[in-house]
Length: 111
Image 1: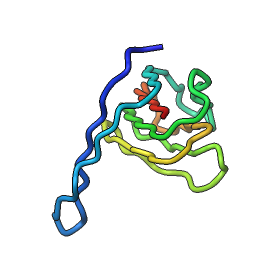
Image 2 (image 1 turned 135 degrees about the vertical axis):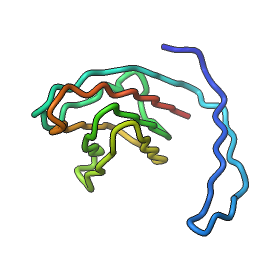
Image 3 (image 1 turned 45 degrees about the vertical axis):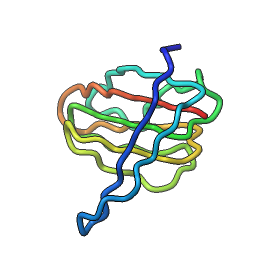
Image 4 (image 1 turned 30 degrees about the vertical axis):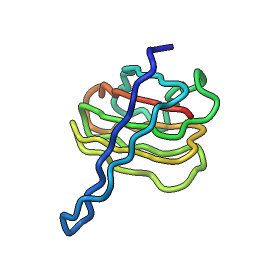
């Protein structure tokens, strides 16, 4: 398991108004890089090091689709962009139809 980190986020609304920063120190953090071959659907990202995550930050180097364990909505994430999920996440799945292997950087934070 990696060293613990302090997380600070500043939310900005669609009209550009900054909201109050959110700062917290998680109980556990995991960060990893995984490779997902093109054509793969619903490859699970192993997050078993943390029982339940409060926040998952995912940054792929290719366009991918991310789905949460609840089987709900799939999120398209463009290459080199970030998706941040703030919820009690039990699992994350990646699908890659970009035409080449995608490297996915994952930061998983539990409290």
